[in-house]
Image (cartoon, rainbow, N blue to C red; front, side, top):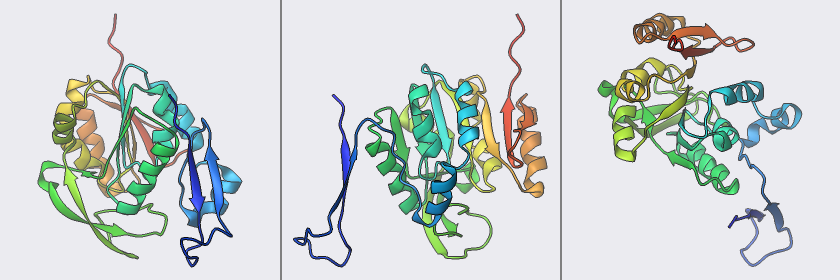
Length: 244
């Protein structure tokens, strides 16, 4: 049985019983994305951000494996790739962005997606940390750098710990976009990657001070790294196919 959703919108200044300006939106067997209002003109004109990259990523997904969306934001990768995977586990620590992610999953009626409000990092980072908020759309927030709009307390755990707690296995594809914490995420993910035979990893890296450390770590895991064409700060790490 498929569940459809609708959004009933009321004026924030109207009384609960005032139905003069109610607006209904019916979701009927469609994928729904709850997206930041501040970026509405960009989405209206250009569609989903990184849509080409999302489409390209489908080749790494399998209906027999798990996709990890680490730094999921409001879920454009999660929602778009969900039907190509057996299971999706999405990580988003920022509170309001996480709520939007969960709403997108519910509106899209996706039963194979699990959303976790947790940041991933290294064993040394585990605990309560401070997330620096840099934009109204939830993008760019990081435990590194300086706050622009405020700060928020978040929980950080290692992927290895979360994988054990939630039974995450058979990982076929990983996307990491965590604003400069990619290296630390991998430090806390070695057992999970090994258990899944080192799946392909799509990751962001636009900080030269981090890239050498990050790339060396991945080379030591026998990954090859290539820059994704058309995306100056996105890279794909993959291991060579075994020879027959």
